[in-house]
Picture 1 (tube, rainbow, N blue to C red):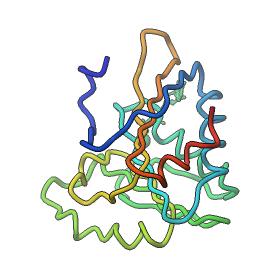
Picture 2: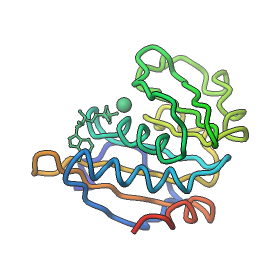
Picture 3: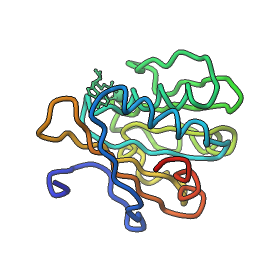
Picture 4: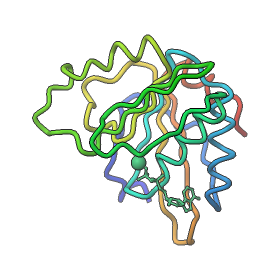
Amino acid sequence: MDSKFKHLSLDNEFLEKTIFSNSLDDTKKLGIKLGKNIQKEDIILLAGDLGAGKTELVRSIVEGSGSESFVRSPTFVLINNYEGPTKITHCDFYRMDENLDEEELGIEEYYEDSATLIEWPERVKNNLPEDCLIIKIFFTEIDNQREFKFYSTGNKSKALLEGIQ
Ligand SMILES: Nc1ncnc2c1ncn2[C@@H]1O[C@H](COP(=O)(O)OP(=O)(O)O)[C@@H](O)[C@H]1O
Ligand SMILES: [Mg+2]
């Protein structure tokens, strides 16, 4: 299965957990648990094909964090900010212009100032922080089922996983 996955893969990623979600509802529960744990300076990278469930997961993480903000799937906006008990920055770089300089985005300032969730992180591969949680979402043969693989790249991202079994 991994061989078909064409998305982000970092040298220092370490597979911590694999969880199967059998429905959107399962994914929501997973996101809510993660959201309860999320803190400023946490970074989550979401990798997976279109329709895998990245935005749905972001939606439930934001809900779990206690924010009442509405999460949109950004079409032209690359970055959305959600206010709440933990400030969350949601980036979706799917449509990012290939020529846009990663550094021009100024995402580093969000890394320090909020929890940052990034869809299509492969687009900013050279501008990612050291310690981030990577979530890879795979379609399976079964309708509405997704395989979630969680990778840590340091102690902070590992700690973020403690709330989920
Ligand atoms: N187990 C599941 N987990 C998440 N989404 C699911 C699941 N099963 C079906 N879906 C559907 O897949 C779609 C995921 O969409 P979205 O989160 O926008 O994908 P992405 O952001 O990865 O492109 C939604 O329409 C959702 O209802
Ligand atoms: Mg999306």
